[in-house]
Amino acid sequence: MNWKKAIVAVPLSVGLLVPTFQVASAHDGEHHHPHASVSTPASDLRASLDALLSEHAFLAVVAMQKGIDGAEDFDQAAGALNANTDDLSAAVASVYGEEGGAAFKEIWGSHIGYFVDYVTATAEDNEEGRQQALAELDEYTVEQAAFLDTATESRLKASELEAGLKMHVEQLVWAFDNYVAGDFDKAYDNVRHAIEHMYEPGKGLSWAITDQFPEKFENTSVDTPAADLRADLNHLFAEHAALAVLAMQKGIDGAGDFENAAGALNENTADLSAAVGSVYGEEGGAAFEEIWSSHIGYFVDYVVATGEENEEGREAAIAELEEYKVEQAAFLDTATEGRLKAADLEEGLQMHIDELLLAFNSYNEANYETTYNTIRESYAHMFGVGEMMSGAIVDQFPENFEKDMPTDMPAAGMGGAADNGMNAAIAWTVAGLISAIVLTQVIAFRRKATQE
Image 1 (cartoon, rainbow, N blue to C red):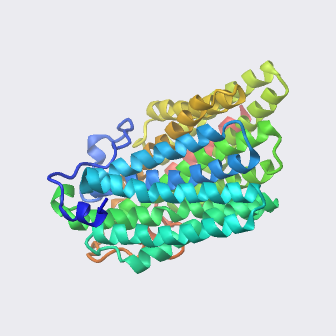
Image 2: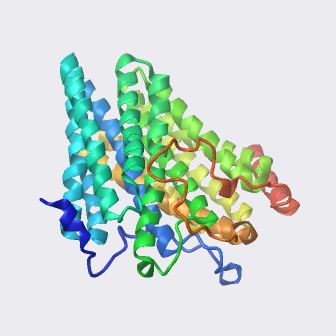
Image 3: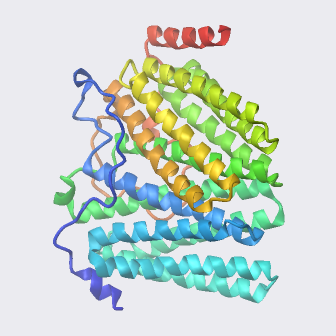
């Protein structure tokens, strides 16, 4: 296939890449600020690409671990990764036509095959095979970069794309090599960096597309403080779901890297709590962390009880999760001054709980098709949570999200290392952002819950 020729002609229409993640509306009309919004055609595109690209990194890590372990669910993990490729290719096709999507799929799919070759060679202690796979991955980065350079009419430069793609390859290889070597601390550091890094190509590619077809996205920008906030929260919430699933699997398997997987999940909690604290102050962040951490502990209790075949313990953990749901919803309702409604939040939190429990229970019962379908649903669901939460914050503090928008390509393209800190959009000075009344309500709620 001559893919360069295939993507030169622009298709007649450019659809939204994947369906927007819908959440229950939590905004009263009186709160609406139209000039600062997290939900625009451009930011929806960015979120859609972020979801697929970051999920790719997570599923690739899981599939490579399952492959080297000879795990029973390897085929289903690999199937989920291939389903992600199908979705990503359909997204590309919605912009660059069916031939463009097919060309992308052929190239993108090849690098997944080369990772499989690398895992196979490692299992066989075949150093020559490992080096061959790495050489093929190097060739892939050149071909993929050339495709995207051509598709975006050089809005994304091949040389910069190659650097970013090479980083993606290296992060997955490092995560895998460290896992095989038993250096699990490094392995999970690499896992987190690999997931985070994919939000750069999500931003870069969405910028290129919206710049290429501005009328299709109502001339909105992917590079706004509100869109950055949404992306940051999407990243942390989705990573939470991914790491929770992985830690629960490792726990029931008695895996040697359980503590490290759980540690990565706790680091995610710390980062998420810092993000909340950057908006609602140190006390607000600490209160959020205490509540949020509790539900992770209840999931651990559920896993332990399952391992012990203790049905009473499982039911007790579920009851604790029910109480957590109410407490977390009340916290966020209060903090956002009613922009997020407790009833809607409870419904969303229950969905999150149900998804993680189904993913775990089906895994424990060896119903792996259900496991990986549910993992994907759980991951996607958290992008709705990020949109909802960021929307409430932008509506609450619109003055922090109304600045002149840049017209050049954002710095976060396909190349370079991801910023390990939170984006500047939520790193503003927090003094005075939230009233003493709201903080007092939050702290009083926590104290009451503790006393009860």
